[in-house]
Image (cartoon, rainbow, N blue to C red; front, top):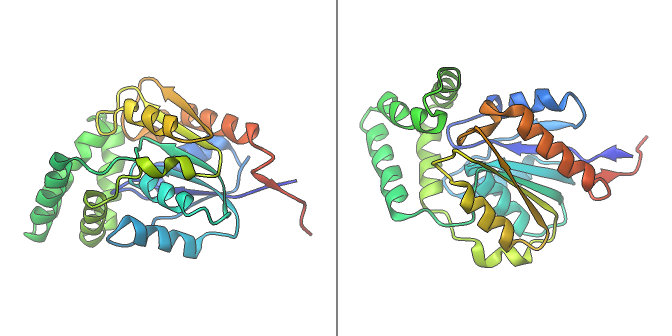
Length: 238
């Protein structure tokens, strides 16, 4: 049997460096590819990811990448064999978060990209020096246009809670006990709304779980995929 590849979607302001510690911990057990969806809406990002993804895959998303992953999975195309959602939710952005995104867009468009980074990076990194450095570098490398597009996408995302019961693939939902951006209770609510889901809570981590606790994140993902090996494997190919 051959394992279906993993397509891993990063968070806002992040790229493959967010998932790399988890990929390293998986140690070649799975074929992992990080894809960053492009566009100014979650739907456009989903379209972009689907245009790059293989025919069948396991979809893994964190935070904004989780919104995109959920959008893709809810389309029920048959291509997503299993879904893993880290530090994410199914709710629309609350008004205070929407206003915060609008403010950040305004700051960037007024020439204050570095100021915007200085506001967002400490929040998602919890000020942990090694994590903060990676976050600042990723966001800076992606650039102003990507930052603005992503802020527009997350502030205008749809509430998907009423759609969850229609999801037709097994799902892992992972929350972090010290995540103040997406509190783990939102992940629990997400898992409860899905027909076939498990919720895993990881201690001693904030929002960017793959950078803080990559071993625990990889262990949760590995256990889930092994339990659903029938759905996430395909026959041998020449």
